[in-house]
Amino acid sequence: MSKVMKIPAKLNRATMTPLDTPVKRKVAGYARVSTDSEEQQTSYAAQVSYYTEYIQKRADWEFVNVYTDQGISATNTKHRSGFNAMIADALAGKINLIVTKSVSRFARNTVDSLTTVRKLKEKGVEVYFEKENIYTLDSKGELFITIMSSLAQEESRSISENVTWGQRKRMADGKVSIPYGRFLGYRKGDDGLPEIVPEEAEVVRLIYRSFMEGLTSGKIAQMLMEKSITAPGGKEKWHSSTIESILTNEKYKGSALLQKKFTVDFLTKRVKINEGEAPQYFVEHSHPPIIDPEEFELVQAEISRRKAIGRIYSSSNIFSAKIICSCCGGFFGSKVWHSTSKYRRVIWQCNHKFSNGEKCMTPHLYEDDIKKKFIEVCNRIAPDKADFIASCREIVTLLSDYTALDKKIEEQYVHLNGLATAMQNFIKENAMHPQSEDFYKKKMAEYVKLKTKGEGVLKDLQSKKVTRLSRKELLEWLVHTLEENEILIDGFDEKLWRLMVEKVVVGTDGKLIFTLRNGMEVEV
Image (tube, rainbow, N blue to C red):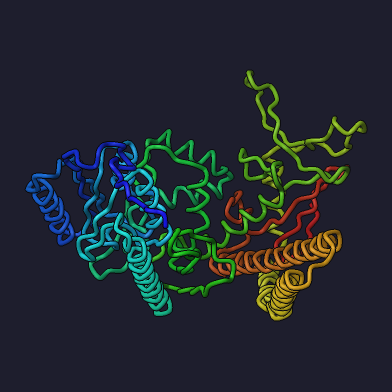
């Protein structure tokens, strides 16, 4: 029978140094608190002090550092600078042992925790979890780590779900929360509700007023910077996206649409725009408005109008994209005659007058003439003001009935959900009973085509509903304005122009046909 002799290992596999060589372990501590509260600050300072003393009092340990993260969640290690710096130093050979309070202080994500521990293990770096008394290089270490990390991850899930439930309960109760630090015009009042900041509210009103005067978001941003007005969050630079957000945020009219976005995954914290996956809550009169609801809706209608016009829209004048050529259907644009002389005049003519090969026969218009003709329109319908208002109300009633449109939207949702189920069933069936690759690709292409078409139909239906709502609100404001004021005017009224005029078509004989918001046509 053969004789077997065991030759013991003499070298450390990680450092390749003799096992009997007395070497001090380079040790670092890791401390983290997840909020910036005063109580947690005390805990944070205590952790740092504790681990500094804990490591330094060991004669066989060499103190490296205590790495820290403050006010950062442990759910994901991506944004933890202290943690990431510690791991980088450990992998670079500057640390042999990391001491931390518990698995949950290290990471609440099982994948992150195990990946990091294994990465350190390959370099001979050990982690000691004091509370659980686990050394990761121990044979049982990884099993314990997996169990404890999973428990910690489930704890995070439970906390996340509780927080989400609490937020949705507040929403269902109509309690509005505003990110005051980045929200212009409001601050948190003594009663916990939003209250208006007067000087910031004036900036918001200036933005809305400038938009209705014809300026684009980019032009408004430029104007605010020229006036040295501070942007939300105390920033110096204004962006057109910031202006657009202010112009479309319903909170400025005193209402609030809650849960516009929701968190998809509690681990990654990925946020998605709510397209119907989670409930939403609309709270009317939830706080004092900065912008009159009627003015807000007029702005939404103007936004829709400009989007429909596209890049042709110019912010230079209130007549932009309102006056149409009867020859080519193009818009009239402003031109300056004799710009450097005392005879300087602004005229409006078809933008394609000389660019379509065949000259448009519509004449140019002077701004003063357009204004005079609008005054004539107002004065012509003034005697029948009651009938005009009645016709507007009839249209409002028709626009308020969304029954048919809502039914089509609901049917489209059912169609898309059925399509998604069919796709999933096909994929499962193919996994169990594989089809030919060509058949599978062809069938999936058909599903994708149907899905794309269905989503397009749904988007179009939703857009129609938004357009109807905007037109309804605009007509309601027009009715309100006409009830409070006379149509009979002796001077040009810009607000009345914006409210009443849908478009103006210029004939080749110079006559103008005004189409008003209620569909009435008046030729002058």
